[in-house]
Image (cartoon, rainbow, N blue to C red):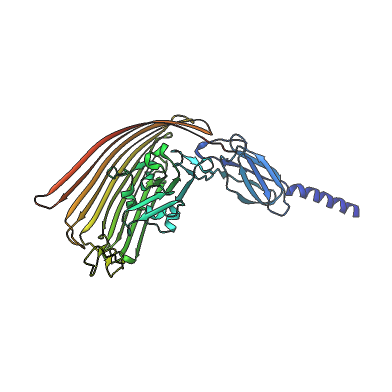
Length: 485
């Protein structure tokens, strides 16, 4: 009897062990856009200390299967054998004894930060050979930045100077170079004021409020081969967001001292099939008082972007950027109190005693507005060749009005500066291998500007000057990058 009992126990345990190991796990890796990529490694690791690890590979359909897996808690991870083309979110699961579990996973593209300002086209951070900084929209919201000038103060090597409070003229000195040596781009296309003496964007720097922006990229160093004369010191690319699928909106407001009022609203809608999307944003920033109660300034910005993808390899996009600003200006420093009868006497300047640093001028205003419209087309010919083109129409206008009020002698005068730029560009990018790209293109630019002024003396004096010029540029450039997989 004792022998029979022992034999029965041995048979029972011999049958029980295979029963506990009879669990199986199978599933499929689902790739986006119907792609099929075999030979992905799927790892199954027991979460218990010293637990076993199992591994298998997927077939042409993305299917995998594990047999004879003990019950317990496991972590599962799928990874590409071809580098970091795709990664997969790691999951956890529990297998019961004798269970045939099905567990599917969805492939996720890795998030790899890329920039365009360094080469005029998309490059990953690993490929960039220049000094590039970028500031995301989330960073700007966290800091409650209102304008582009505020955001650029955080860039090393940039000195941003504003002649007064919000809305006053702002300048950028990159690495000690001149104000006009920093180029401003909107979605990779140059923005500048043709009526400015140096032809740069300085007169409108303070008018770029952060209405609808996805990222600001900054190239610290020469970019003249890509963006022209004004990019000797650096380049700033103001990038607008693409409309996402579905309907999204955001409204925000801010109130503060000095009569601050700020409103911003954004709304976007994209079709689920990704063929069409549209977005728009509007903001209004105003200071009704300012430092001394009469330094009022206001700025209204409107932005819109349209994305149309009629075919899988064709993209057509349109962008609009409108700005309207008005700011009250103060008088230049003026003398005050009793002064010496002769200029031969040198006196020490003392604020409030013999001079006023920044006296109010109730009828001196500066108005500025611009309109930038862009149309861009991208066509993928094959995996190595992409043809792109764009057109930009840009109009700018600045008006300075000064009446007879204010400190000292002033005569009424009005000055108007206006300009128009039409730019057309077409280029092709050929990538024979991953580390090399050849770009060849043609660009045409037509520019006109004017300066009108008048004073109400007699019947009025008017002085106008207008000049039109055209420039044609043929570009051919290559870039080479080496990266280790």
